[in-house]
Length: 191
Image (cartoon, rainbow, N blue to C red; front, side, top):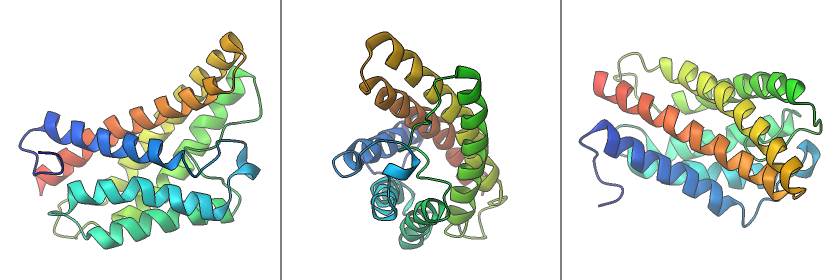
């Protein structure tokens, strides 16, 4: 039943969320969560692959699957290579919540915009308003990163375990998955 054509927004979003968060969890076998300098280009590339491949299975009837995977992988590799960092696998060095909110919103917007542009190249131009995917990605990441980062630092303070930061990143991915899943379904239905 999984990776089948979704008939409803709920079933599509659920499949999308499972695929996206599952890809993140799988990536943790190879990517060590840390500060920006701790996550290298190869790890970011693998992370992009771990996220994009299951997503491409869900979208395979509507997009160019191979291009989706390659574009996503290259987006994360490029963001890491130019010093932006592997958004979704890095935590800020500051423990100040206000700075985390600002950092998360800024990094989420820029990273989401870069990922959105890359993935947009895999969406056929026959999909009406396909350019909106760029904005959907940027806005989703701009919302999710500061929330996840703030929850991560709160959990770190409460438990004194770095696992709190990892939980914050998981929340980021859950939010991104839900927000992009809802809007991906809407975009594909409008085409």
